[in-house]
Image (tube, rainbow, N blue to C red; front, side, top):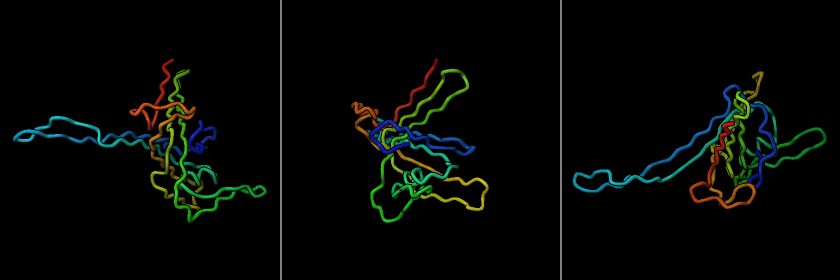
Length: 164
């Protein structure tokens, strides 16, 4: 996970036992004709892609990305997050690499540009392990991380499944 526009090189850190969830959705429209009106043509009205996980590692940068706003800095040996008042959410690039147990069978999910799906993070400070829900929604991107043009039907996400 890094700022959008380049291949992410920052690991999202440790995630909870529930792993990472990805969601694809297409909402369909329907043109009806005749009497009685019968479905004549279906078309896609909207498409979305979401990626969600629970981070169990404290990181000011990751929290700022998940909140969509915030200023981070290093002060001595402390990582600092300052939050509140930023009206424009930042965008991030997301790369999920899921390595399956069979050699060379890796699934790469590339989200060219994303913003927080719901910028609410809540954790229970009394828990032994703190969990930070992270949820991102893909945003249309005309280019991939290398600056290459993306076709109009490929501008949210790319899933690359290595078979051997």
